[in-house]
Length: 288
Image (cartoon, rainbow, N blue to C red; front, top):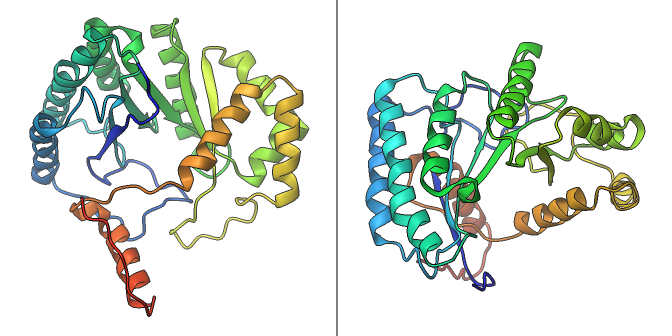
């Protein structure tokens, strides 16, 4: 099956998060109530019934936050688990039955929590459609993401637990390609050491984005010469797969993304309104 024009639907559930990244994308982050969290899950469950999963959106579903797996509330966990069950039945199974194994359940998690509920969700998908239905990624950073060393060690422990639980799966580990990380890769063998400790993972470098926390991060954005040096290093030290993922990240950073009518996307709407007001010209808007 050709995947040239296929798409994945990305749902943002909420901005609620159990971490305070120094490079967070969101300013004035709003934490929504339990009632609104349940309403968000219910809205997505309903939306699943109106999407063309077998044709236009046959790459599957991505659920993102904030952080969606850290809540200990049983009602939220049960609702989210039911939603994942619906995704399996309405999206993954029909596509896999048609021979489309590109169709995935995709998610990114920070891993700063007890992973019991996360593993319950993953087990559900594996039991129904196998590992082929997964696109699971942990966020990781060696300098700016964690407020305490204990948080970082918890994430590393959960990455280990994931590899032990699903030994035949290659877990994605996404990390921002900062200047600090580039220096660690080139001068301190970060990638070599990482893969010795975590052989069942795939490091995915993400293109740095503007931060809205107001915190000055001296070695966050990479220098131009360092980027060229990094590309050369990856291509000559056996990390072609890391380079390929990074190339995709740079491409995806430049692509248009849909913005929905959800309170957690207020920043996007404010950004667009300011751009429109200050453009001093006629604006063309695609409303789908």
